[in-house]
Length: 268
Image (cartoon, rainbow, N blue to C red; front, top):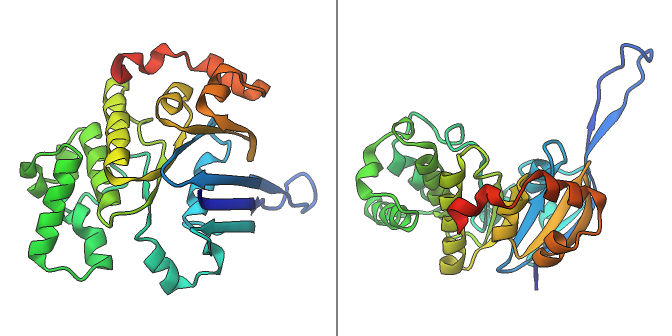
């Protein structure tokens, strides 16, 4: 069953006036006519090189940026027709884990405040209820309760990413866009985060759009893989088929560029 249905989705950015063409303008098609389904309970891996449009597509799905054209349906509901208050309600179900585990956390807020922020915005809970929920979330992502009163800069990159994951889980979402969540971490720490995401998916019945440039990471976590090149999906299929018998030359080049041993030590 498709939780999210994307049809002919495009995002076009206009370019400024050309210094050579006498005022002629162009455009960049960051996402170019993408159609795909994301099924409830699966991890769809979205893989491609930097600049392929992966992160733009992830943000379009959440309406963090607005598309130029196309449609997005979530649970049969037209996301692009939703007004601001309707989108506010829908955001409880749809969250994002960012690439940079430091830049995405407010350095002025203690960890318990960071994790509780979505609860303050979206739910009318008492301070005690919020404290209990924060404690639950920190246990779920493998952080000690003693971390609650510390600031993000006091933690390692992997620990900060765990804080970001806890915040993303605060409202019990159904769908999470994980945008290169391990690319800023070393291999062993990244492997721990990937294993944590797999564990949380089993525990909470999550659906992931997992964005990465690393085929070994996507191979480990994803149910299906979509390969993105210059704004388009050039190949999509079951993980075994994409990694074992790729049909597109670009997919083969990605497999050759990221050898299997890259994540083996940590993902075992």
